Image 1: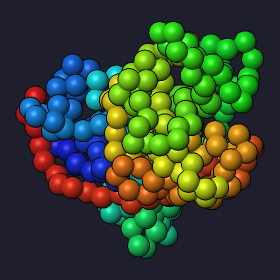
Image 2: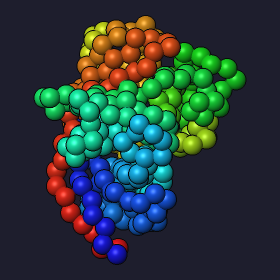
Image 3: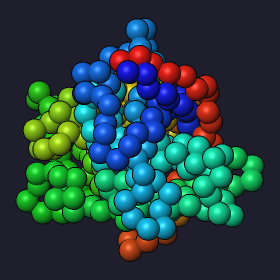
Length: 276
């Protein structure tokens, strides 16, 4: 079976985008994991599967699969790439369109210069939203990892995130703590792990170890999670530039009760097909 795809990226966070009929996913988890391989497959952090709309006034329903083949709830940079692709296909009205996903509706704006903004939705700190095992909601939590205790913030942006504050990204133990926290038993569905260095109240640097993928060049919901946690800790302003390894993202969050917006570039690399 021949399947068409579009390869896209947002600051190096890369995706294979597939259009499929409703409810007819042409892949198994094992096939997606093979396609994600950068030596023998297409190579991608996530596969984005576009289905016909399920609700009126929406442009698409999309599903997200990590490089390990497992389906997840949300992907901020993926949503921005989908919005850019659909806008190029003529689906946007005055640059605006509404996307539908397992995590809910996503409002998107495609700007004339090429930047794409998405409203990721509500920021949720209650442990059950991730889910995360904790007796009560708190600003900070302690995790025990093989005799080492680390402090994290925990937040849901439709998908689960743990955020650590580090002095330097160059020396941050991403390769060691990333997988250990990702699979920590207190996170029932695993977790994305962000390592945040604060430059000033309007700028941070960030590395993210993504659940089911590993470290990526950028992570949209990870950028939003870091800003939300930094705001909760009283360290950041409402408008923050997030410097990832692949480039810069803009995040705006007014505070509790308001949605969080993510802005940055999105690009199409090439189109192709695979034979399954």
